[in-house]
Image (cartoon, rainbow, N blue to C red; front, side):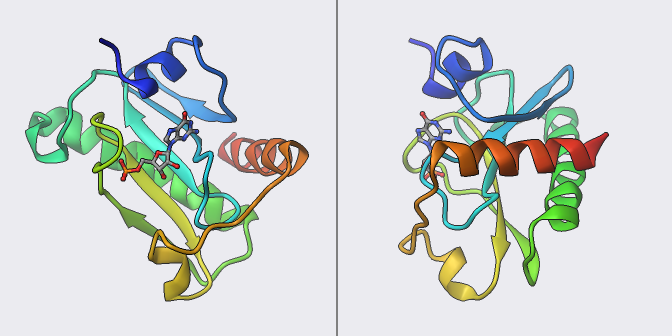
Length: 130
Ligand code: 5GP
């Protein structure tokens, strides 16, 4: 059965999309640690980061770097943190999280955004990529 992220990539489940290229797809995390928290996901469904072949791994990191730079350009933060966890969704994803402090890195502190706030920050980040 396809993962929830494959369904998002295929447009079967809505998301606040940030960007895509031939191999990877980025969208806002629906339960963010901070405004602008973004997930970068390889289109090929693999459960664990370290099981990606080297080329797919390097492409995901290069894609995540570009998206992270766009986040840093438009979301006020100390820096963008990067985490790979994967305990909830078994489809590789890089968390890009605008950090003000360690609390944003814990996955215990969460921020509530309205649909308009999600839309706006997604537009700002994707706009900074162009
Ligand atoms: P992890 O697998 O790294 O522990 O966490 C999975 C992440 O995916 C969580 O931060 C969660 O909020 C996010 N997530 C789970 N389901 C969805 C979804 O349907 N849409 C979006 N945009 N994010 C999701």
